[in-house]
Length: 335
Image (cartoon, rainbow, N blue to C red; front, side):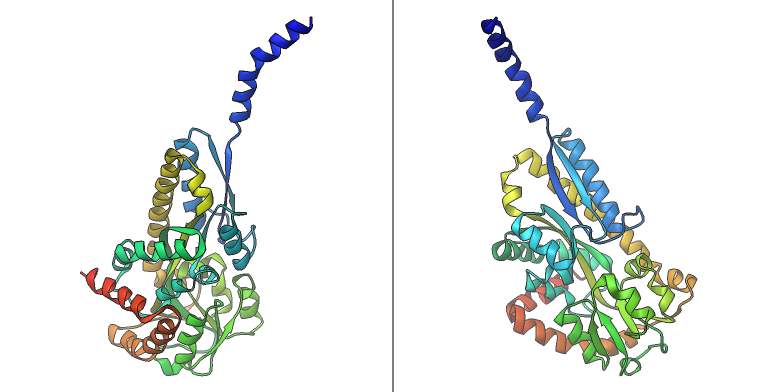
């Protein structure tokens, strides 16, 4: 009887091994937007999940943590740096917590159009920035997508010139770049976490804020604001990232699935956000805001005031050579 049991166990071992190996590898993937299909970050995450799980025939499962479920900015960025989180799509303000050179992309009034910005992100400059991030942090920057072209809103008065912003209290994401930008225009900058922004506007802790229309809609910020100015001061980004140690342990086929899935997510994300950007006036007016659309000459007045001090700040933090590389890429990709 013992011999029969032993043979039975030997015969079952291959089957047991197959069962064990059938357990999928889980990718923990975090982002900060609500878990709705009309939110670009979440839609991108769903596209990524579907592609990776199908391309790997179930060998990889993607678990999505939307709406900051994994934690706040610093927790997500430290998680992906340490490897407790495998992947994330996060805004540039969060990324700056572990990689200050991302602040390059916060220099105001840089691009002519969405396509112009994308060509710069996807250029040799973008590849070099990705390599720098990998070398400094151990986090691989896979792609850059839009966090919306950023505009000013407030509850006090219409804004058409830099002087109209003087003495306003404006919320910014925690970032010295945005602080320099807002203060150069004569306003007072208050760094308030994203999750606390609606309450800060409602309680009049701040008079206004600056964001892309996607984020304004996602958090219903229009409820607490009266005026919007479409100045397009910063073409804000979301960075798609993966922990490098985790990525390197994957097979070439699984790495390819992640890279392909990220490109698909990036493209869906860009299309959704840019569509909302281009419809900003209609969307904001529909929700009761008085919208001011600036002429190129009026935008240039903001550029002349705000761009030089922000550029000088970034040069001190990142180095003049990197700022020059960015402006060279902008010029080279201009059509």
